[in-house]
Image (cartoon, rainbow, N blue to C red; front, side, top):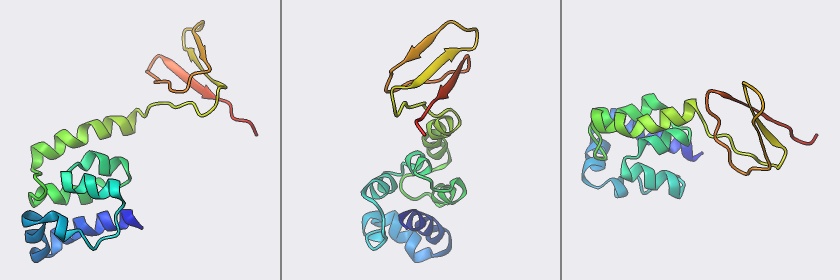
Length: 132
Protein backbone atom coordinates (compact mmCIF):
# COMPACT_ATOMS: atom_id res chain seq x y z
CA UNK A 1 0.00 0.00 0.00
CA UNK A 2 2.84 2.42 0.68
CA UNK A 3 4.19 2.23 -2.88
CA UNK A 4 0.80 3.48 -3.99
CA UNK A 5 1.34 6.46 -1.67
CA UNK A 6 4.69 7.26 -3.33
CA UNK A 7 2.93 7.21 -6.70
CA UNK A 8 0.11 9.34 -5.31
CA UNK A 9 2.59 11.98 -4.10
CA UNK A 10 4.16 12.12 -7.56
CA UNK A 11 0.76 12.36 -9.25
CA UNK A 12 -0.36 15.15 -6.93
CA UNK A 13 2.81 17.13 -7.65
CA UNK A 14 1.77 17.08 -11.31
CA UNK A 15 -1.95 17.77 -10.88
CA UNK A 16 -2.43 19.80 -7.67
CA UNK A 17 -0.78 23.23 -7.69
CA UNK A 18 -1.36 23.82 -3.96
CA UNK A 19 0.20 20.46 -3.07
CA UNK A 20 3.14 21.19 -5.39
CA UNK A 21 3.79 24.49 -3.61
CA UNK A 22 3.55 22.79 -0.22
CA UNK A 23 6.11 20.22 -1.43
CA UNK A 24 8.44 23.09 -2.28
CA UNK A 25 7.90 24.95 1.01
CA UNK A 26 7.53 22.14 3.58
CA UNK A 27 7.74 18.66 2.07
CA UNK A 28 7.66 16.89 5.45
CA UNK A 29 4.30 18.45 6.26
CA UNK A 30 3.02 17.79 2.73
CA UNK A 31 3.61 14.04 2.98
CA UNK A 32 2.81 13.65 6.69
CA UNK A 33 -0.61 12.06 6.08
CA UNK A 34 0.55 9.56 3.45
CA UNK A 35 1.01 5.91 4.40
CA UNK A 36 4.73 5.56 3.70
CA UNK A 37 7.36 3.30 5.21
CA UNK A 38 10.20 5.03 7.03
CA UNK A 39 12.55 4.14 4.17
CA UNK A 40 10.19 5.61 1.56
CA UNK A 41 9.59 8.76 3.61
CA UNK A 42 13.32 9.30 4.13
CA UNK A 43 14.11 8.72 0.45
CA UNK A 44 11.27 10.96 -0.69
CA UNK A 45 12.29 13.85 1.57
CA UNK A 46 15.92 13.49 0.43
CA UNK A 47 14.86 13.45 -3.23
CA UNK A 48 16.51 10.04 -3.52
CA UNK A 49 14.65 8.86 -6.61
CA UNK A 50 17.16 6.07 -7.17
CA UNK A 51 16.24 4.39 -3.90
CA UNK A 52 12.54 4.90 -4.61
CA UNK A 53 13.01 3.24 -8.01
CA UNK A 54 14.77 0.29 -6.41
CA UNK A 55 11.86 0.01 -3.98
CA UNK A 56 9.52 -0.29 -6.95
CA UNK A 57 8.33 3.23 -7.72
CA UNK A 58 7.68 3.88 -11.41
CA UNK A 59 10.29 6.01 -13.17
CA UNK A 60 7.71 7.99 -15.12
CA UNK A 61 5.96 9.11 -11.95
CA UNK A 62 9.26 9.88 -10.21
CA UNK A 63 10.15 12.02 -13.22
CA UNK A 64 7.25 14.31 -12.38
CA UNK A 65 9.14 15.38 -9.25
CA UNK A 66 12.07 16.73 -11.27
CA UNK A 67 9.78 18.21 -13.89
CA UNK A 68 8.26 20.48 -11.24
CA UNK A 69 11.55 20.98 -9.40
CA UNK A 70 10.47 19.75 -5.98
CA UNK A 71 12.65 18.09 -3.33
CA UNK A 72 15.77 19.73 -4.76
CA UNK A 73 15.42 17.85 -8.03
CA UNK A 74 16.11 19.10 -11.50
CA UNK A 75 16.90 17.13 -14.65
CA UNK A 76 20.62 16.73 -13.95
CA UNK A 77 20.20 15.80 -10.29
CA UNK A 78 17.42 13.35 -11.19
CA UNK A 79 19.58 11.60 -13.80
CA UNK A 80 22.57 11.49 -11.44
CA UNK A 81 20.49 9.86 -8.70
CA UNK A 82 18.75 7.43 -11.05
CA UNK A 83 21.89 6.21 -12.85
CA UNK A 84 23.15 3.89 -10.07
CA UNK A 85 19.65 2.49 -9.60
CA UNK A 86 19.28 1.74 -13.31
CA UNK A 87 22.66 -0.01 -13.38
CA UNK A 88 21.74 -2.03 -10.32
CA UNK A 89 18.39 -3.02 -11.83
CA UNK A 90 20.13 -4.22 -15.01
CA UNK A 91 22.95 -6.03 -13.20
CA UNK A 92 21.70 -6.93 -9.74
CA UNK A 93 24.20 -8.45 -7.31
CA UNK A 94 23.82 -12.17 -6.89
CA UNK A 95 23.24 -13.12 -3.29
CA UNK A 96 23.65 -16.63 -2.03
CA UNK A 97 20.83 -17.63 0.27
CA UNK A 98 22.28 -21.03 1.03
CA UNK A 99 25.76 -22.57 0.88
CA UNK A 100 25.03 -24.50 -2.33
CA UNK A 101 25.44 -21.52 -4.66
CA UNK A 102 28.09 -22.21 -7.26
CA UNK A 103 29.81 -19.81 -9.63
CA UNK A 104 31.67 -21.18 -12.62
CA UNK A 105 33.67 -19.20 -15.15
CA UNK A 106 32.42 -19.60 -18.70
CA UNK A 107 35.92 -20.69 -19.74
CA UNK A 108 35.74 -23.40 -17.06
CA UNK A 109 37.89 -24.22 -14.13
CA UNK A 110 37.03 -21.52 -11.61
CA UNK A 111 34.68 -22.66 -8.88
CA UNK A 112 33.56 -20.69 -5.86
CA UNK A 113 31.16 -22.11 -3.32
CA UNK A 114 29.91 -21.56 0.22
CA UNK A 115 29.86 -17.80 -0.21
CA UNK A 116 27.17 -15.57 1.27
CA UNK A 117 27.51 -12.73 -1.25
CA UNK A 118 28.73 -13.02 -4.82
CA UNK A 119 28.82 -10.48 -7.60
CA UNK A 120 28.31 -11.86 -11.09
CA UNK A 121 30.09 -10.25 -14.02
CA UNK A 122 29.74 -10.82 -17.75
CA UNK A 123 32.26 -13.67 -17.91
CA UNK A 124 30.68 -15.66 -15.10
CA UNK A 125 27.56 -17.74 -15.25
CA UNK A 126 25.69 -18.22 -12.04
CA UNK A 127 23.67 -21.21 -11.01
CA UNK A 128 21.99 -21.79 -7.69
CA UNK A 129 20.54 -25.02 -6.37
CA UNK A 130 17.83 -24.77 -3.79
CA UNK A 131 16.50 -27.76 -1.87
CA UNK A 132 13.06 -28.83 -3.04
